[in-house]
Amino acid sequence: MDFKFELSDQPAQPVLSMRTRTAVGNLPQELGKAYGAIIGYLNELGEKPLDAAFAAYYNMDMADLDVEMGFPVPKALPGRGEIKSSEIPAGKQVSCLYQGPYSQMEPVYNEMMKWINEHGYTPTGTSYEFYYNSPMEVPESELLTKVVFPLK
Image (cartoon, rainbow, N blue to C red):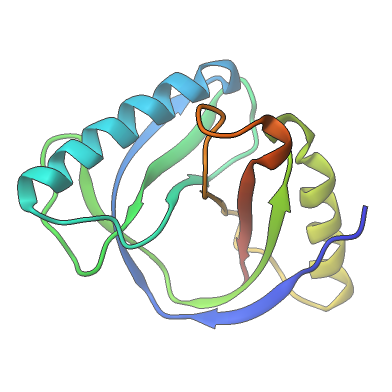
């Protein structure tokens, strides 16, 4: 498969998010719960997400994923309870827009890591996925996910 990678410098991005540890099999429920809670809170604040929902993966242990789930917001907003005010750090990153089933994303990750190494960069160890639609809206073959690796 041919992937198009984009290198960019990004400013810090305020987010509202929730962080948890879960097995990959429970991820859809955890994402749904977090996104629903955050959207509800944003509605209470009279605010809207700035961009698509995201998940930040701090490890790749499929039995015990350390994942942060949330939405970019227009400005720093106060957190409440499990919903935290945070940010996606500023810096250089490489990204790739992928279309297709979540279960077939491994080649994107493998090719991105290869590209990062070939171009002399070092990943920070965190990866982000931005979800532009969902399996409840479109067939799996039409799912759009932006995969992002922040770089050191």
